[in-house]
Length: 382
Image (cartoon, rainbow, N blue to C red):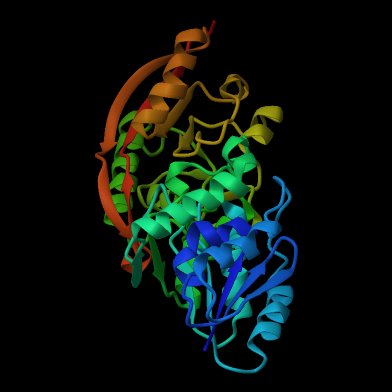
């Protein structure tokens, strides 16, 4: 069986797959997605020679390096397999470097029915349950470090978060897992944050099945009701996603205007809550630019993580804004802003849910959820 290593850039083969390309008994093919190059490492060659052959393919920093897509990768895979048995090794769909995560997802699609193993790779937020671990010995680690120092000096110095090489990206134990199509897609979506890939699977953050999220959402509804009882006026929920909070608020008796700019999420929101809530497409920026949706209060629940200008709150047509954030972001962003602005005061601060460790993606991985604190902001009239 031929081992095929599909990576975004050539250095990835040494950083994440050295235990694969170093197996002298078998032929190994390295596919570089950014350039379309295919390197054949013949059987019987020692690791040092294989790394010497790989080195000329290491290119300069390229912020535009991207997966060529499943079709182009399938052509490279077929050229290596030549119709025979082959096994594909590639990046994790949940690699925090999105360029690698996308290539890992695309390469798995390109593999067809062939077995695929994903490297855990760079994963500072998730701990993975792996299926195969390869601890490197001292000689192998020394070879990996020497490769980086000789051929990747520009990657040690770059400011690019996608391509910089740091200690945590040079693994002494290389860990791999197999994943079916559904698990792969969920892992890819989980790390997508706010980009369009987050909507590639329903309920990417598993609100429907997470005990932590259920506690957080229920506590949020109770907190909102304590300050704005049902019947006191409509609520405007900004960034409602698929409606996990929206439906709870409606069930509590609130009139809710739920806004969601992502069209895929908005379609699911309408499916879940469309008969009972008013659905809108505006973002926070849109609502501030055109303050045409007044409410008893605006809800900014777990959505001020993405660099939004907090000054936008000044233009919202409501005198109450209820914000929920994890404690670290609350301390770093909202609290300093409140100390500077003359237009808002903190009228309440309530812990909603404590931090917890929780499994995700059917138990494939687990992560720390950092807790949530609700802060009621009241306009001062200044």
